[in-house]
Image (cartoon, rainbow, N blue to C red; front, top):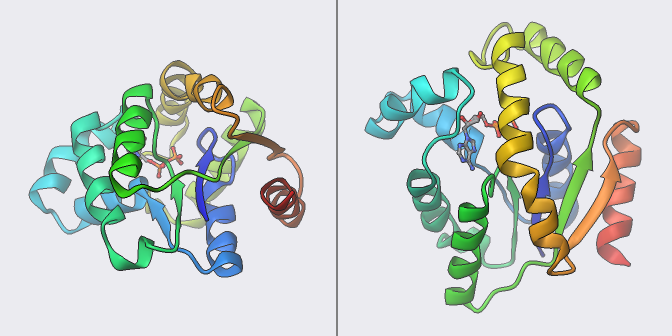
Length: 189
Ligand code: ADP
């Protein structure tokens, strides 16, 4: 099973990805998590990415494409994967198409998790409080920036994948278990 979770910050991609990892026995591949680990470890990549992530901009396509390409080569991705936070631009989606073509692999579905902006702000502010400030990009100003970047750069992926017949839209405002049920139903149908 090869899935992409698509949705704005706070929509619940990470929460659902973790549930789906257990349900389908395939790994979650979160470019945000990978970048945050690199930042925490102060690797050359982390040092380069920190300022960009902190201000809510996107790290360059070349960097994240490299991260994902390397990760997809790992053995645990052979049976499938759940991409969370990638692709985020049309150029990234095209790069992913090339990576999968090279492997002779196909996507099964792209799950669009929809949520309204006010609820997203509320959730992310809540996440910031609960995590004790673990994420330096989870404050209201940077969040609004990330929502704008999502609308400009990532929302066009819905049409991109819709044209390929891959989009499944679920309501991210529903309770967590209902969102999971909707995702599973959309995949299994
Ligand atoms: P969100 O909660 O906004 O969905 P993520 O954890 O997915 O957050 O990503 C956090 C930050 O990491 C982004 O705002 C961006 O700076 C960087 N990032 C993550 N994935 C990508 C990507 N595919 N392309 C570019 N930048 C990315």
